[in-house]
Image (cartoon, rainbow, N blue to C red; front, side, top):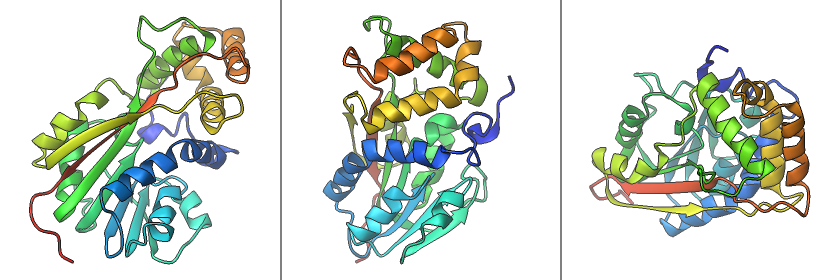
Length: 266
């Protein structure tokens, strides 16, 4: 199965329900993301870049709740962003891996669930750090796999292992390097580097449970190709997510941040 740029082979923006799948992930993680950004001081007067903005939930909350000056929302496909315009929100369809991607200097550069799907991750972190104005902060969030070899065997665990292996084979997703974010941010010349992890609870009917169920359906072909499970096992894993028997840890979201040296302009 050939790899596709940015994963269109698996997660096609034009496929019915893709916007809703992204929004389920947003419902699971946006509150945590916004709390972190507010703790970092993001607020009025800030010019922000939201990389891989998806449906734009974080971009709009930065404007509505944090009161930032402006947000440039960038994605490989901006159809969902254009459906929901907002004052102060600019939309750019662009390839963030391109050498000429240089939209200016920002007080905040934010990317969530983006770099884990892209090659040349270390170079990209350096490139994103270069987009910071002096005194600006780079905030990166990506998934951390908690289904280790010692994790209790459940239908969920089996499905997640097949998903990570299948996505790595088809679109290049690799979360194994995510815990190295702090080191990579320091290597990009940033300081005051720190990180934290959030693990949303798997509760029947919750946004994160619905997100994983939808994600497995879209990546079914890649998951089955690993040989780790069959159709019946995958269908069983979806049912397990919606049952009171579910007892597993969802993938965590690691968020790391670092500041560009210098004094920010007021």
